[in-house]
Image 1 (spheres, rainbow, N blue to C red):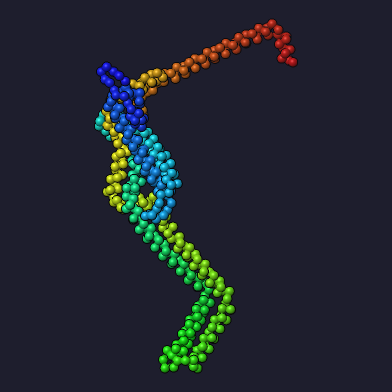
Image 2: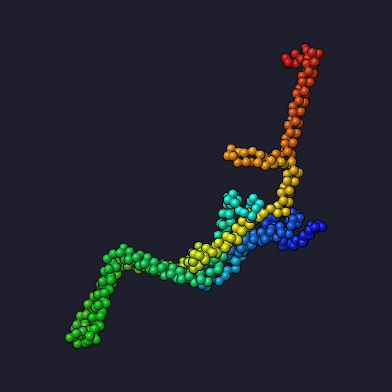
Length: 409
């Protein structure tokens, strides 16, 4: 707007966009001062930057949640997950942007002075708490991205530890199950093991005798060797007879042992897959706290809280300027145009708090008109009924007999 005593520079498209981000009224800002325009542009810039950071942080968090699990060190980028993370990140950023915009536009100006009073802090407390929660949601994904290299190394160590622990558990579990299986078949397995041990001992004695390794006995196929061979043959026949008598049970035992071995190998094959499942958002946040330490993690969170809460405190610290008086004048003109009167601090409620009295003159006028029209309609209806009554009386007076006959019929 051009004036003889003051000329405002023309606002750019970026400036007008940032005004919208801050919830500023373009019509009034183009008629206020340049300092008002800069204030709302900076305020909108903070709101927009917060929304953009929330979108980036949310997108990375969603990617971490939905990405395919694998080694923390060698984990290639998945394009499908990237597109999904971009979509969710944009939605999340827009949501935080609108929440921030609502917080800033609803904060008001406090008492219009630079000082922030206790009363102003109390009224702004819900908005401050909302801002702190939003800052936390933004800071954590950014934190795990900042320390990604250190987190990946630490996470890979945990994955390897998880693999070792899981493998030990699998081995112990299946060893216990095999023991239970042997116990279930009882003495059959023990007797067979004993026969096999005796056969091995007899084979060894026979071999030693043939080779001349037995103490004080010459080698060769002598009487002792023949006796040992005969004994070995007896033991082998006993084993064959034993297997024939207990064949079904032994087949079942070996079958179930084979099934156990297959199941064991299958579970050990899942070892790496289960360990890779450790790569989640929660685990990365935990490791980020371990890697960064308490103070660095706190500093990053406080930094985002400062960015998020700056617009709220900024508005509470703003003094009234031309823009604010123009906004008040606009509000009063709009209220007057629609017949709304506000009598400030008109009465006190039961708790002794001063309240404003709002009078809606236009609504009261319409209500008054409706009431008057209704009353007139009532009077006219009453008059019409009276005239109808008089006319009917006259008709009865002129034709009484016809009226009585009509009642009898």
